[in-house]
Image 1: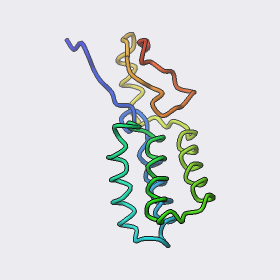
Image 2 (image 1 turned 180 degrees about the vertical axis):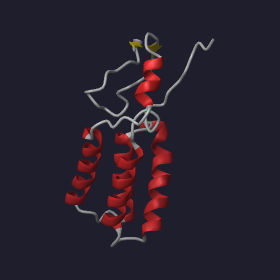
Image 3 (image 1 turned 180 degrees about the horizontal axis):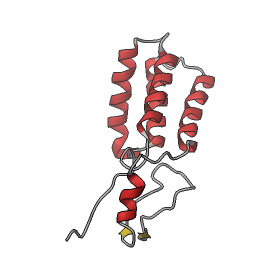
Length: 138
């Protein structure tokens, strides 16, 4: 009998990646008059890796990495308005409704009565319960 089954919620239980892809496209478009899109891709990836140990995974770290990338690739010429737009992109990602992946609910129902432990508010969402200190009953 299994004693532990682990789920990574993002893109396992709910859709998440499309939000990141759309934000990335918007960053590429914003920086298109400064550098080639491929350079945006490379620099954003480098920023995310460098910031991972500081911010962890999630929307907040991704947003800060986009802002860092924009400032660097524009040679600090990006406008405050564009920085504000990047912050708003991040906020819209955090506000986006949770879209459960087909079949995830039925899998979780099989685990009903079990306890889950994890950190559900890693992206700063106040509408998701924090579970880092206590288990959640399904």
